[in-house]
Each structure stands twice: as structure tokens, then as C-alpha cells.
Length: 367
Image 1 (cartoon, rainbow, N blue to C red):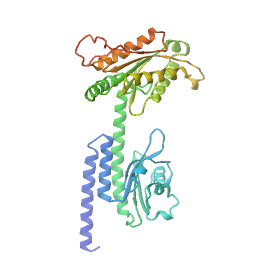
Image 2 (image 1 turned 180 degrees about the vertical axis):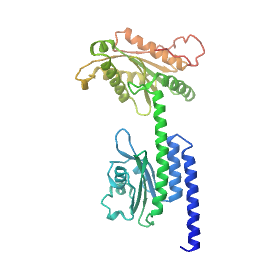
Image 3 (image 1 turned 30 degrees about the horizontal axis):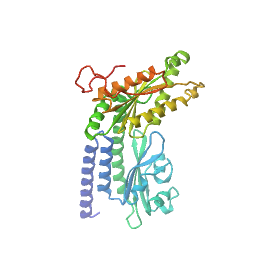
Image 4 (image 1 turned 45 degrees about the horizontal axis):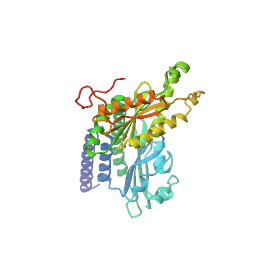
């Protein structure tokens, strides 16, 4: 290598090391997953200049791989697709944990043409690197170039591997942070949100409802004669029943709009944003019907039938604050029990007296 080429190579190396140092600082400065992914997107685009590229992660629930980030031609289509581990070059890299540099996919049996067909893009060269953290593959960063673009090089592989190493650590840290956050707001027995989170979220939603003049409803329900389940089948089966109740209520909710809470004991609450009294009453009716048609603990060889008494309250029709709303729904639920249980009761138009008159929602009925 002549002196000019050597000087140029050293300059590129220094610039690359500076970029890596900057990326490491940026990725360790946040524990928010969206910010981490945005930083990864920025660095891949600026350092490697690929025509198309994607960051593929594994869905922790289903095991499927999905396109968390897709950049370039046909990216919008790819965002809606999934692939199995082992499928295509990216899937093979995920399964093996070994990076792949393919200069021409036409001669590679691992290449899956269905993504080109979906995105109307013609792939020539692929560079795919696993996101490895503590020996566990989280996903894949895949770079794709077309027939008119230069194929990826070993230098590109080195650069992308370094980016992936930083990104994997940052993604794992962000996920762990999110899991810790979820533990503080989630009921460990049912998987629903806990009462603490209801109190915090309700204050925020009431203020938002008042600001934008949107209705906000709260459905409160209590399982009828639940003590008999514990007495007859034991507390372990009682806890298993509560878990199935939580799953049932979450399945009945509207994704992204409704939140389900275990308020205490065998009491649950559902927060319905932008939902008026009629809409909430309809959802309450669906809940009662779902309980009537459900047999619990079948996986344990039992046939346990449980019904629910349901109370409905809406802001601002039945409450002037978060505290009023939860009390109104609670009182309405007791009204349903007074009617003979397995029933629905809508709160009275006049909210109950809060007792302190400040209406700030800082106190909630204890359980």
C-alpha cells in the first residue's frame, strides 16, 4: 500500500472509530426502546448508505420475526410481514447467530424471494448481522442493495457488526428497563394492570377528557360468590380462576383503547377512553354475557361457573374528578349486587360526595 492509500485508510479508520464512540455514548444515554431504535436507524443510514435495510426483531410472545424498522423501496409493505426463524437469509442468520455476506442472492439457496415480490424490489446483495446479547439472538440487521448498486464488502461487514454489537446491548437494556416498569404496574397473579396504575392513569385520562371534551367511562365488576370457588376448590384454583378472568376481560377489550385492572381481591376495572355511557353499558353487557357462557378451569379438569356484578360510570355525566368516577363506578357495582347479582347498574347522574370537596382525585377507595 502506497503512503497516500495508507493515509486514506488510517483517516477512514479514525473517522469510523469516532463514529462508533459517538454511537456508544448515544445508545447508552437512553433506556427508551424507541429512542434506541431511532439512533440505530440514524447510524446505519449514515455510515453504510444502503439502498434498503431493516432491523428485524423477534416477537417475544409468538416467536415470529417482524420488521421493527424498514427503510427504502417497499418498506411500508415489509412492516406488515412476518417470517419464521430460519426463513430466508435473515431468518438463517437469526437461527444460527452467524453473520452472512451474500454478493449475489441468485446463487444462495437460503434466499426467500417472497419479500422481493411483496415490496417490488429486486435484491442482489445482502449483508445480515445478528443482534447478539449475552449469547442470545434478539434479531437481525439486514442491508439490501439492488442490481445497480455495488455489492457489500468485508469492510461493511465489520462496520455493521460493530453497530449490531452496540445496538443489541442497548435494546436488551431498554427491554429489561421496560420489564421492570411493567412489574411495578402489573398484578402478578392475573397479568392485568394493578390498582396503583389505575389511580395514576385515571387522573391523567380525566384531565385529558376534560380538556378535549371526550367522554371517559369506567366499568367496575365484582365476581359473584367467589368465596365459594376458594372454599370448594382451594386457593390455588381460585387464583387460577382469577387469571382466566383477567384473560377474558383483556380479550374483550379494544386493542390500544381499553385497559384492564385488578382492583383488589376479586374486583376488576376496565377504563374505556372516549366512550360514553351507552357505549360503556354495551361493553358491560358483553362482559356479563361472556361470563354466563364461560366455563372456567377446564384445563384443570373442572367446570366452574362464575358471574359478575357490573357497575358503569362516565365522566363527566356521573363524576367531576377521578375520585368521583371510581367511587361512582364502585357504588354502581354494589347497586348491581343489590339487584340480585349477575346484573349491570349505571351510576346516578349526581356524583357521590367525595368527603373532602377538593376533587383532585388524590384519594381512592381502599381495597
